[in-house]
Length: 243
Image 1 (tube, rainbow, N blue to C red):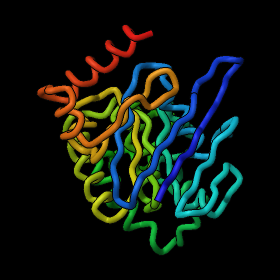
Image 2 (cartoon, rainbow, N blue to C red):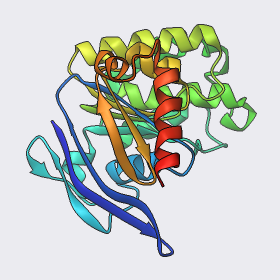
Image 3 (cartoon, helix red, strand yellow):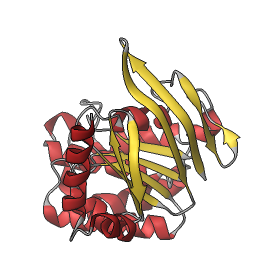
């Protein structure tokens, strides 16, 4: 279980988060939608342990979590919105480096590596330097390293950036499998169809606050809309009018 209470973060006197509350159960897929600068990436970075909040509490499986909590960070993996890679490593070396961080035994790695290079269709680049990778291939590498550690909590920030439609479809299937196996998945995206297809719940964050959330069925019933795109646009427009 992942619980967030009153998460606040400010950058240069500008509030990025104004009190985020969120509770995710085992196996839940939660899509976080919102305009640029709404607080999606800040939320995920805090949960990934990259930055600290100004205030608020985070609990993972009932235990208080913070960025220096090594044992809890071992059950969380993260795909950032701006990929960071080591350009002078090959794709396989990159996965070994990440596997070392998560203490995955050497004898269990080959099967994992084989699967992801094949499933995400970049086997041809396995022994090529990452500096030669296209943006889409780098994204496949980041997705592979995040999923191969079999996290209990998977954080995804715009995971389908530069990914071609065929692999994107396979990735969504993989997310559903991971969710069925108990993984909590929290992702931020501007691709509304992705949120509609894989999310159990959807939250809309604007100006550092989650202003509405619910299952797809609940949100569409509220808005009497046909799809999440219509609901999203109506929600953002109505919020801006209320300011």
